[in-house]
Picture 1 (cartoon, rainbow, N blue to C red):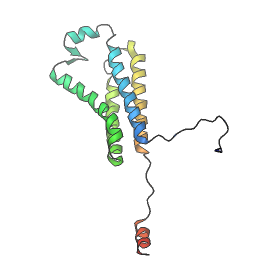
Picture 2: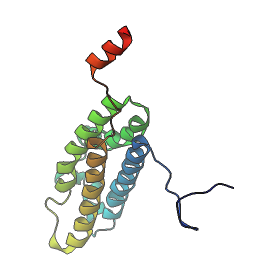
Picture 3: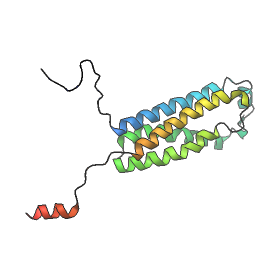
Picture 4: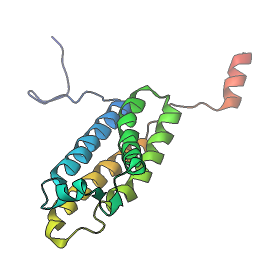
Length: 158
């Protein structure tokens, strides 16, 4: 029989690596990012604008679709990179990419009517919360214990 200090019925909280938390946050971000774009198709006149070759006053030519793919590819790749990159590079990549996506998320409300304030307010707010989580998780990445180099050298000589 195994004894614990926890009261009976208490749920255990297994340790989740930072990489898994970051990958989960980027996955959540991507679902939200995609569904906001999808739900925007339901706004009256939006599909007509796409058919006319315009999205948010931008022509939908090769440059637009390349930039749109780039904006989607970075967080998509961060899901994989968060689980595969070495810790130091991983931390830096998450800090940089999440920081760059804060203004991208806020820009989504540019030029929108007040009619959709709740939609864009909620979606941007949720995106910013996820980005804040990513920034905090990367910033507070646990560090290994480090012993003073001089003491290591002294112990090695003994």
